[in-house]
Amino acid sequence: MAGGNAIRGSRVGAGPMGEAERGEAAPRVVIAYYCANDHVTTPSFAQEPGMVIPEFWDCPRCGFPAGQDQDNPPAPPKAEPYKTHLAYVKERRSDKEGAVILDEALKSLRDRGLIQ
Image (cartoon, rainbow, N blue to C red; front, top):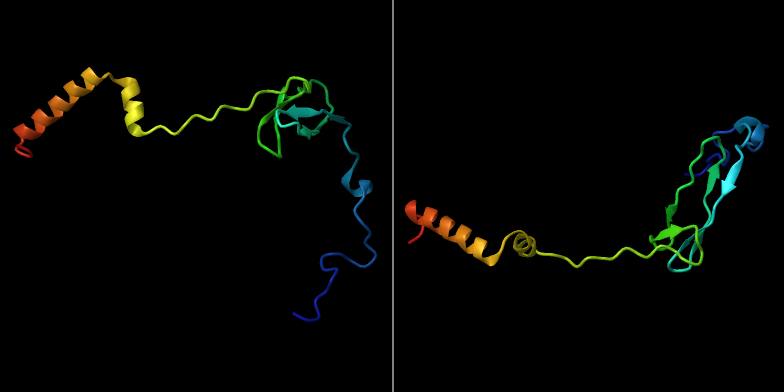
């Protein structure tokens, strides 16, 4: 690929794009958010009438929630252990109810001759 043009897509005499081409920048508000791992995030928001600044922000470094109070950042979410299908079933039904359902299913299979 020899002979390529290094400034493809621009014309001779074109300068860098500045405020004149983009327009005026909106006034900004910078808010600091602090996470439980002592990370500081400072997103900026366009200042406009009726603006609502979020109470929490996700930390881009660790993913934990971050709040505006540096001394009391929000607690990290608790990771629940993996549950098997059987664990979810046992939450909904007692062992006695499970035995009744199993007996009904076995009776149905026996009646159809699928098991003995």
